[in-house]
Length: 253
Length: 198
Image (cartoon, rainbow over all chains, first blue to last red; front, side, top):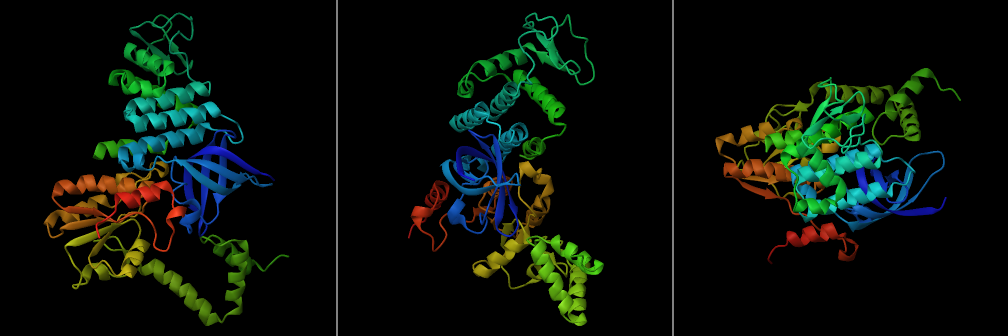
């Protein structure tokens, strides 16, 4: 088996055995890669802080026959987001990114756009993008890139442009519907006020760093958070733990 | 080859221990089998004894067989300082250094969003309760120097500083005996950030 190399983000890392770490990466060229970093807990010289959450590294690894786990040979640090995560709230938001990325990335399936999305959002946070717009940007684009974001510009039934005053997300149809087509408030349906549709358009039409200056309103971002949470749950059938911890950290601080 | 059922059962149990694989479990099982019955009984009794008698200290949450633990009841210790650690075994590492003579508080974890561990899952409320009487002047945050440990230390410092306490963080940086050229940029950055005048 040849040595493989790819740029990668660390999505998860936890101890196994006496001295090793099981690490999940989102690579630029090969989707999700999971592997064992031998001796990573005992010797700091080989991996140092390179396997901390969301480190961007040049990963080298061997795939092994008969197992899904790669053997991690090296992880040279290219960019660290360690200090960003010292703040508990920001750390929890970044953990949400990692957990969502882990759920959506597929093993051995190249997903360079998703890799670039994560990189762009992390850099924008470092440059000063507030946490709520950063989280909504990452969520909306994650759904879009994986083909599961309903159109937030046209009605999912009649195809007409959604009215500026707002629309509603119909959970059974999995679509945003205009006032004429919408059945009203069904179980799990979500209101999408005009501010939310405008925030979605701002997110979908520009890079994340642009939102540092032109921050969408809280009234626009909140319904998008609810929409993303609903879609994540419907797609993965689980709740992401990081979001619960984020709420707890925000509640206590 | 099929082993005798009791031996298979022992191997299976030993395999469940951390860091013990199939081969090691087999070696341990045969070692126990070859030893005397007294040794086997002593091992079994020690395991049961730990389960029956070890509990958490009601003050600092260290593991102990008497409550409060020996550290909390030691009159010779400096009661004006509390060192906050993640796990009971961290206490041994700090005690070995011989540099700290105060009290401890074990959080039993660190903030870890990916594992669903939030502030309410840690022994933070009990720490705040301990600080109420005003006898503690300094809290040393000795959580691990990783993402979770740093976030936990920041979280605690924000809770503790308004109480008028001196809140300190253990230094981070280059390990003794290492070489600068092999250190990664985060470690070197932290070492520079925590530099001191000599």
